[in-house]
Image 1 (cartoon, helix red, strand yellow):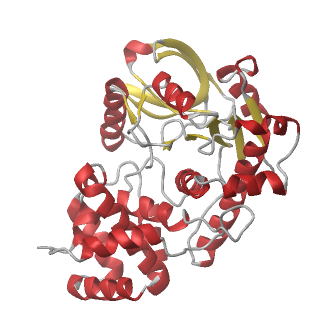
Image 2 (image 1 turned 120 degrees about the horizontal axis):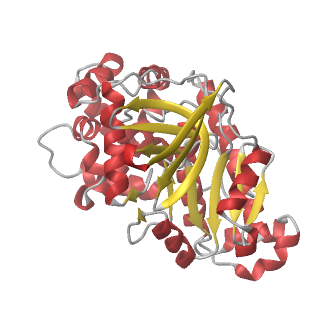
Length: 392
C-alpha cells in the first residue's frame, strides 16, 4: 500500500494538483515563501517553495517535505524574500515535530544515525530496533540498485516515521489526519506528508523500561520470536521502500508512476530473513506467499496478457477482487526482471525516472515505454515469465 486514501476534500485537492501539474509549468523558485493558510480546519504557518501556481491554487512544498495544496479561499497571507529554500535539518525537524507530536502527550523522538527520525509512543527498545532497520534498509536499497546501474541520490529531507503503540492509537491518528484506512491496514506511506505511519504489531508494551536504554539482543530477539514478528518486519520494509524510493529518485514523487512497479519493488524487498538479527537482509528473495498466489493466478485462463493488462491499469490494485492477484503478479514480474534481465530493468527505470509532472500517463504510452526496452513480443515474454515462475 503506497499511500492512504483521504477524505473527499483531500481527494479533490490531490486531483486538482495532478490536473494543474499537467497544464502549468512545474518548477521551483529561488525565493522562500512564508504562507499563512487554513488546512484541515486549522490555521497553519509554513515556510517552503511554490512548486506549482495557477489561478485555481498553489502547491507548497514545505521545509519538512510535506506538500500542501492550497485553494485561494484558504490562503490567508503570503510573502517571500530572497532567502534560498533549504530543507529542515534533522534537529530543526525534531523541534517542528514536537509541535505536532507534543512530549506532554507521550511522544518520544529518535534521531537515527542515518536519514530517519522516528516519532514513537511505543517502547524505546522497539523504536531503536525499528530505526536501525530503516537505516539499514536505506543503505542497502541504494547500494543494491546502484550496482544494477540505477542512479539514486540522497534524500533531500529527513525521513519521518511515526510508530504508535497500538492499533487503536494508529487508527485514531489516521482519523484525525483525514485518512481512510482499510480494515486490515497496519501501516501506510503518504505521498503528501512524505511520512510512514504504523503501529507496533507485537503490542509489547511490557518493554517500557526500554525507554531508558537502547534495544539489546534479548529485546530484538523477543520482537522476532513474537508470532506476528514476520508481519511486522514485512510491513516496516514495504512502507519504507516506498518512502526511500520516492526520496532517492527511484520514483519521481510528483510524476506519474505505474503502480505495478513501485508495488513490485516494495514486495521484492519486504521478505523477512529470520536468520539475521534485525529480521531482514537486503537483496531480492522469493516471496513465498506471493509466489503461491501468483501460481494460482497464472493457472487461470487469460484472454490477454495479464502482465500487459497490469502495466496499463492501476485500478487492478485498488479493486478488492483483483488486488491480491496483481500484487503477486507485480512481485513476480519485478523478481523475473531482476534475476533474468537486470540491465534492461535499469534502462526501463531510467525512462520512468525522467518523467515529470507534465508527462502524459495513458495506457498506450506505458506500453510503448515497456516495449522500448523489453520488446513487443508479448507471447514470448509471457512464456519466459511463466517458465521462470514454475521453476522457483
